[in-house]
Image (tube, rainbow, N blue to C red; front, side, top):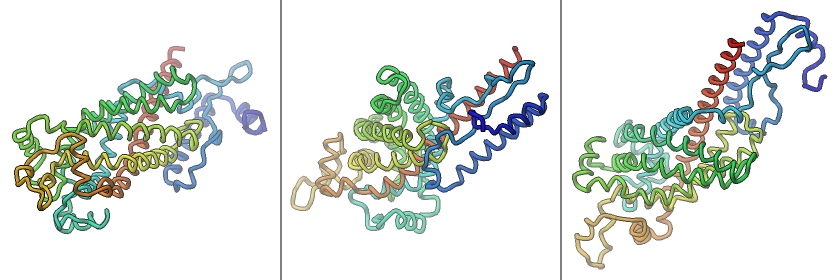
Length: 395
């Protein structure tokens, strides 16, 4: 066994084979085995893939033959963590947009259940025991496609929102990391980058969230997305689309800071060499999303209240006076939302829908990170191979 990990007999066979055709065949076979291993890794159970890959995979190398001793070509496959450093902003934006749309679309039925379970004063027909009970009853009583209502509004907002989100995060993570902790992972840089990226994400996503959640509510009076947009604009003004923006930021800034810091920490444990490992991206993303979602549920309940403006939450309890006038007041601001939630539900009211929120966020973030890392890796690898091919032609 040689120092590079290949048996001597394999090396002698390669050296005596000669000819570019033999080298090309070996490289093609190695590529096929490499991609097969990746596909197989995705299908394996997550538990079997939790152990990090530390030097366990053989790098694909091209051997050049000449009159002198064999040399390793510069065309060897680069390490995964080295690839994204040369990726353009458009690469991050495209990968982020695809990841965001897939995340929201695939998990949209659970998001519908979460919105309804966070209702402070639901109608009797909209009171559910758990997530599966809610889905079953919604489909049975309102139709198969009812849990998907508002999906088009979400897809339109998720694309640009996540494009800005991931592009900003990648740029700031690298810039701040080079300043705070050069050459190593910095949790402070990750958290700060996530917070700043959230400002752009929520600015693009907030109007879609308002329309989506109003369409998701039980007995929603709107016929569709455009009808909801017109009705809200005419009756409440354009400010209604950003009424929950400060609450959204108050929730999402700590959510994303905790989310990114947890994800990067778990990547250090499960994938310390930062190779492309779909299972580690999926597990790290899912756990990070679940932890951040549970911790920020109270703020999400307030955000849902500000977005939906439930018609009965402003009516005082019997004997308190105030008449119907108070019932038509809009819930404005985070403090008003907090007081309303506490008045109607007490402390448990702040955790309404926590089960649905965790069930929604855990696979959502797992899907988002898996798709994002896949596209980021695929695009940058293709660009690298294209540059190598051009260099070969020039030489």
